[in-house]
Length: 219
Image (cartoon, rainbow, N blue to C red; front, side, top):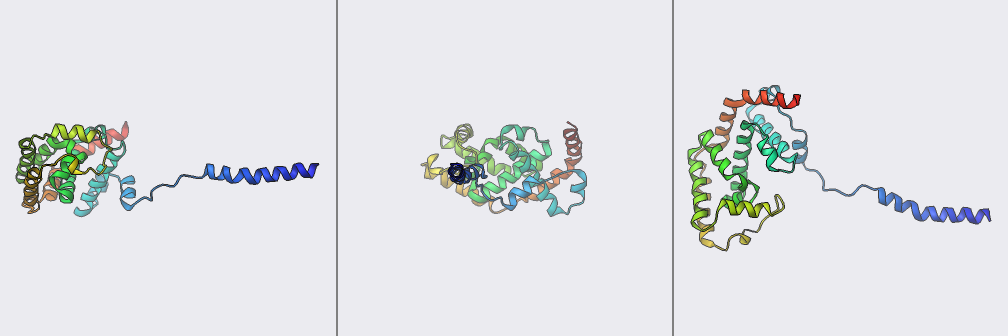
């Protein structure tokens, strides 16, 4: 009798334990990339920045601003809470990245399209007059074809952030796309060095940033 009970217990455990192990096993996650790790461990302070070379400084600012934005899944709050110099760096980086990857159409239809007015201000502040005019022309092209940045923002907000959006969902208008493509080609001539202008602006305003970062740490 005792042996039968013992066997029954063994059989039960043999059935149950693997399921407990499976139940407790961690879910499979997407492998982290180098970008993920560099964003996660990004740091910025006066000492780190001063000890870096020019190329490293630009990378430090890029990954640190992405860390701040990623912390709340790229909501408006993380943008608004960034000190002004970091906002400018972030906006110029986003403009360059989106237009280089998919033109002004991609800039408008991705999350960067939420910050058109702020990007125009950023271009003005760093002295990028040519690119300011290009972006302004792109916005006016939207208006000309009965589209607006406000409508785009509403549509973008209804989508999962950073979801790839089929542009045909927004535009069945080849004239609009052709007009924006012409502006893309002007952008690709790189008449202004946005990276240089961006970093020059940051250098002029960085002392304000260090004090703000210290205040944030104290809080």
